[in-house]
Length: 339
Image (tube, rainbow, N blue to C red):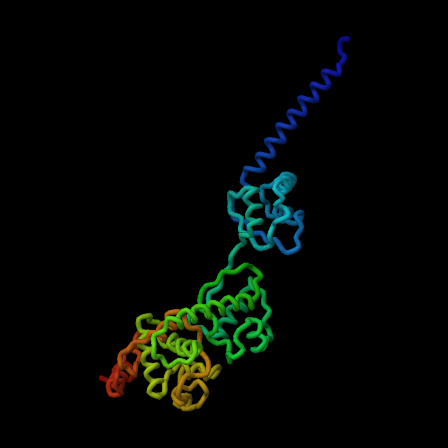
């Protein structure tokens, strides 16, 4: 009958529509799979512990990523990556596709923050640097020394945390705790110190690696010139061996604490603090700063000349002398400015 739509025609039309939809869906899926999801600039996103997959999807959409929620979920469910997404802070570079973003989350390739502890810093300076870093979880407020050393699993025979942390740049994930960060620096110092101690020269006046660490901290504070460190270490070691006072200003300054205002007076040199090496013979009770590997190596491989004195030239280097007479002449030239 004319104008009558047969069953065959209906089925044919449905097949055409289904074919079109299938083709469109396939193209749309391929576009969602292959096209860049991050366009224009880097996007930072944080997956927090306990976030559901839907919450993660919503966070990505809120950052205006070019993703389609349906296909994002389909792609994540295909390889079950939705079950393996690791918490953390991520940097999504321009050009990343949805599979690449999911792979980043699965591998846990989180954004790395950095913090630097320079050679020669004191423990107080380390703590200040940590405290002002917003990406670190702060747990040490009000912690007493014993509690801190216990958390670090440090040797309880250590009288102070001073000098026990290796100066370096450390990479960490957001929300790492201050204790975890300090533990890494402590462990690295122990590793470096033991390595250097095992390869030390013979006949040194140190009973323990800790004593070498104390002297290394003094050498670190005395000079920033790498080539001079073994020379200065040699002077101090010979003074120890000859029962002479070390007479080093950095220990006096450390012993003064908050009373140090940039200058040392006669009263400071005669005030018998445990760290005043102008008054007290031998090593101070603890390190006075963080020494680097070069300073540690220097005290374990010191210069073998007969120098017992040194004085600053004022340019970061020093004049070394074997006799007091030569030393006084150098002091006159470089410190008292006498001709």
